[in-house]
Image (cartoon, rainbow, N blue to C red; front, side):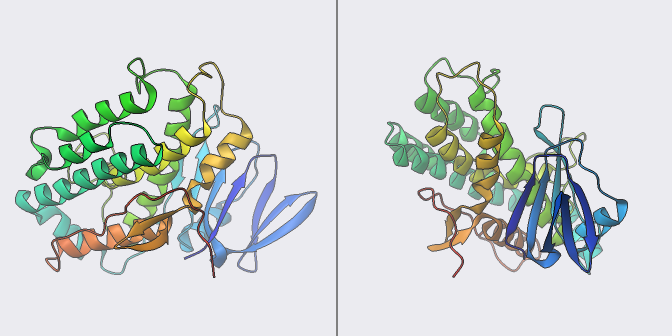
Amino acid sequence: MGFRNIMISSNMKLRIQDQQLVVTAGDEVHIPLEDINCILIENQSVTLSAYLLQKVADSGIALYVCDEKHLPNAVLLPMVRHSRHFKILKYQMETGKPLQKRLWQQVVIQKIRNQALCLQLLELDGHEELLRMCKEVQSGDRTHVEAKAAAYYFRCMYGLGFSRGNDHIINSALNYGYAIIRGMIARSIICYGLEPSIGIFHHSELNNYNLADDMIEPFRPLVDLYVSSHFDISEIDSTLTPEMKKGLFGIINFDMSVKGDMRIVSNCIDMLIASYSSALQGNRTELDLPELIQLQVHSYE
């Protein structure tokens, strides 16, 4: 897997030459495709070819494009990245409700636990109550503890007047970060031969990424921690600057913990999706879920 995450924020020309991405804006920069993890194209004047899209997909690189508000709104994903896609698809379609409910219970518990860790790292009250809520999560979360915990969590972070539906820089930043993580999860789902529209809990017929929306849950507190550490709740009318977006894009360079080992986010995502695929095939019952730690950029040794 590549390690470079590239953000294109100005008018440039992108092309492929000798298995390298060539970025032209006056001078040329050559980057080996094998080194690239993902590309974010923020500027709508960027020029590229269908051949570039093909080579990016062949290399398993997640390529994001943004809308007129410079927010990620689409991601290019490879179609054929697994030799036994139909076999995995059958496992997905034949998975029984009991297993789905147990796996969703694990996801919800870890999400709430990470929310508690987020409050603790921010030195805010409320983490003990969230840890108590973890113990109330039943199979399938049929009592909707996740929703109750989320409402309580955001009140602890931003006060009683805050709502995720508000037009606010905090929500803009959260949505930007979530979109980046969601795209990486969708990429990993495809690479492991899974069908992203078949979720565990999310089942909307209008959503092609139900499974990604399931798997993103324990990663959301990482975005929350970054946003709460870098954005001021009082700046209601502010908009995301290019520098802010660059910082949010850089969240994918941070570490989380899986089974006590520090791993970069993309690796944590792959471990979770691999464990989910293995669980569907009856090889295990526990998911490899990420645990939130203090913000820490991954170090390549």
